[in-house]
Amino acid sequence: MDFIDLKTQYRRLKPSVDARIARVLEHGAYVMGPEVGELEQALARYCGTKHCVSVASGTDALMIALMALEIGPGDEVVTVPFTFFASAEAIALVGATPVFVDIDPRTYNMDPAQLEAAITPRTRAVMPVSLYGQCADFDAINAVACRHGLPVVEDAAQSFGASYKGRRSNALSLIGATSFFPSKPLGAYGDGGALFTDDDRLAQLMREIRLHGQDRRYHHPRLGLTGRLDSIQAAVLLAKLEVFDDEVAARIRLGARYGELLREAFADVPEMIRTPYVEPFNDCVYAQYTIEVPDREGFEAHMKSLGVPTAVHYPSPLHLQPALAHLGLHEGRYPAAEAAARRVVSLPMHPYLAEADQVRVAQAVRQAVG
Ligand SMILES: Cc1ncc(COP(=O)(O)O)c(C=O)c1O
Image (tube, rainbow, N blue to C red; front, side, top):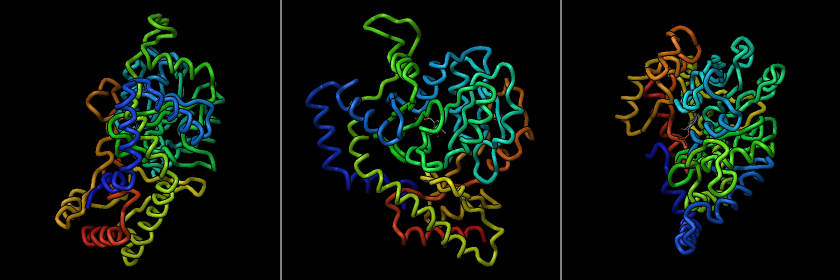
């Protein structure tokens, strides 16, 4: 059993993927070819934003968003400590300081009730993460940010395709930034990412920054990056978009089914497991299907012996990462993030997971928890 099976999806999409890649190889515009513009239009339509700017990775997307907002040294950006390293890394790479707000232990997303206390006169933006494929509570977060005149950037690296109160992830704040890393809900065959906004000026700036800050050929009013998405990756993503609605529906169905199977398996000892909590107003795309178990190390070893792969997203909260030690934040500072980092473990999840495999995973989880 694969933790994430990308081969079954390729077999389904082979004619379209192969034909689209072949077209790029024929026309030879490997960078900024016609597929890039076509993809940007399709993605903007999908998310319901005026603009989409494709970029080379999710990390570049976050950095380009912050650069377009002119955030740099001396500035603070508020995010969460329980996420992939890139969320805080992007803030630090533009020279700003990440400031953390603890998570709501039920959803693993930013706790809006704790946001206000993290805002200082140096705060320049708020960057919630929509972790594991479930959107953060944007109405609550936007309301606090708005009171302080702060822009909100969604780190939507794990939530492309998710919905919040009927609106799509990436369209929930001033800027949405996503990743097309192969294992993401919408994944390329290499690195990729995209930015979303309704703001004309920011969209133009982000387009320029992804191309070395160039506003016309060889004229650079600002610094930028080699931040473009390759035409071949755009071609792959266009093929994958053809079946994406179907895959999102499968993810939602499979997530609900895992919940049923695990609740049944633990009917006698419900306190031994925590299955994902999804807010009633959210549609979660389960970039990861993540549970909590008491003895994670023993659990993972037992699951491995039963032939079921698991993974930990993420074993250490960001305030305890060596690269951010200069922030002077110690153990005990963000208890919900620290508790989650000790207990979470993810199970195999992808849109092509068979019912029999889900049953096998649930039985293995019951056996491994003991
Ligand atoms: C929450 C989060 N933010 C940012 C990123 C960075 O995306 P990428 O790997 O495309 O640079 C990731 C990717 O794993 C992520 O999970």
